[in-house]
Length: 264
Image (cartoon, rainbow, N blue to C red; front, side, top):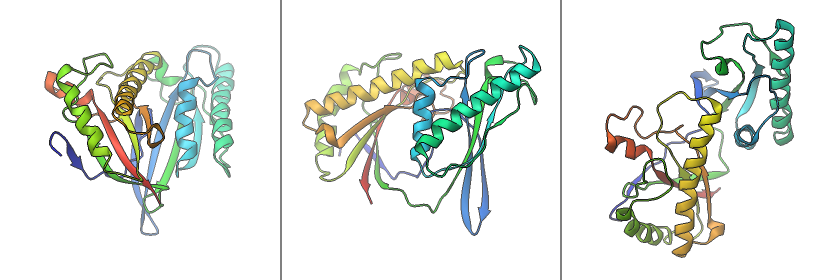
């Protein structure tokens, strides 16, 4: 179909947060990927907010096995209070994961303010989750297409598509109507290369979700049933261009893609 590039989707397991560590090892001739996911907290807080809940819900429903949950704190306050605070953070994460992931037996750990203290204090107020998934583990839904919407562009810092993009929405809808039993997951992206505090990161998750929602609403208007679609935003966690050098490359990160899946 003119205007769109279809590419084979490589299986990916990226969460709604920055992946700080990715390592591979051989176990019984199967590749196992360890992923460290970090959740950040405001000063003195250990309660989970809506963004934490969304991030952990993904992990709880995935095929990942949780291997370790470790809480940390920055150096402000007494050593003993920071130890207790980091323990509460780890326990809060463990409780939420246990509620959605049967058989979770990992005991949360706490390291308080010990270890390397980073210059940016907010990075020390976190919980690290180590999770792994065997590459041979079957998924409940097979991704059969990753549809990159190369001709649909957004106005910077907004969920508004450019006027030149509108004709391609109809073309996209016609393409999707060729799939009878499949589901369409609409994923919004945002362009940002900075390391941001949690409060600012939320802005980009919200923006990317609004972009995905706009495409969802436009497809509804063009006859795609609501029950065949879902949408979400993943901020800048999966950029098309890691370090864009110009406006054109930045536009490539301000995008929406559609995963076409079929249950197994």
